[in-house]
Figure 1 (cartoon, rainbow, N blue to C red):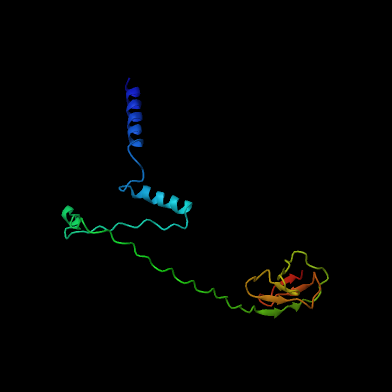
Figure 2 (cartoon, rainbow, N blue to C red):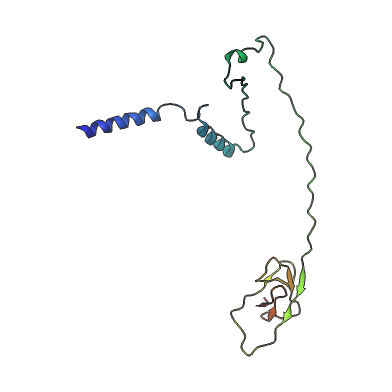
Length: 163
């Protein structure tokens, strides 16, 4: 008889908890965070809601009489219109000259090695490749070598094949 009573109490307490109120109220910072996150995804160009500034007294508590000191008959302040900033022209980045080194030929061997990687061709630059061992070092000039030739990487000293 004790088990059904506990089950009913658990169900009632969960129902009261879930129906207790709106999840994004002022006292719920986690709910506010997720509400603002969802709003920023749904409306990416809108500005965030302004934060309220509360005046604190010397004791750190809000005083009710300090909030009611504003004159009641004063007209509301006109919203200030700020001029939009003038767009600055986009600067084109200066092209960085790539370092180019010529590849050295490797003496022909009796058995060509098939496990060597190929150089990576540079787009729009015929005869230039990027080393498979040092791709960020610079370009390798292989214009004097036919495709499939073993060449020595000038940056690392390792051997690779021309494409």
